[in-house]
Length: 252
Image (cartoon, rainbow, N blue to C red; front, side, top):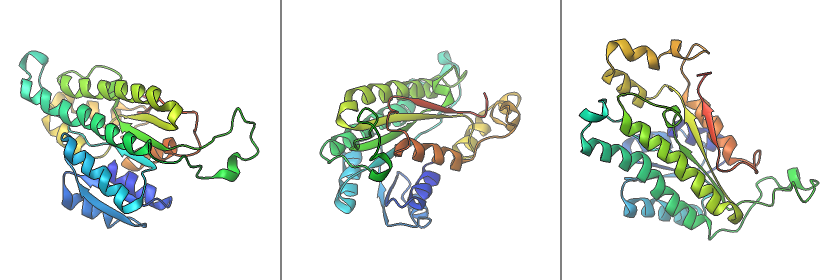
């Protein structure tokens, strides 16, 4: 999803920072972009690494207008009584703490930036009450459909994605008057390497829960569909939208 979103942002004219713990994968993504970009290797569980990522972005491009925080891990499957504590900590560290750290340093940078309107003419003739006066930045976090309901045998992942929604709404309220919007997407099954790994861990009788038949539309999602949602949430098309989560689940 991160790769597809970077590609879409580049198609829209944004310069991109591709940040990943897998530097080689990030370089491959950079090669797909139509605009200038840089690669930053980052471990989102470490504050110093996340801070360095933001510093590198600002050093190269001067500001951060948009961010998509989507680093994640699926975790192993087990009921709560059988789930190792260290596995819970690992999943929460990447999926929840990682989002919190990214927000911490992204927002700190955005607070230093002047608000901008990416398309001033679009809003010039609107009444004052409706006019979009510009934003310092817009952030989207990756939650999940698992952040909206139970996910048996994967309590850590479920907990982490519920946590992302709580962090998202809190950040949105804290910084709304500063011109920083924070929202989240909640995808259902999407064609990614994570989904492939998750399927391999499922018992055969449960694999249908991640397949096309589970969704009323009759298929799973493409990463590009999530990218479109992220770019829309970051755009001038929805300046009143903050603290929201967008469920993208094919009817589930």
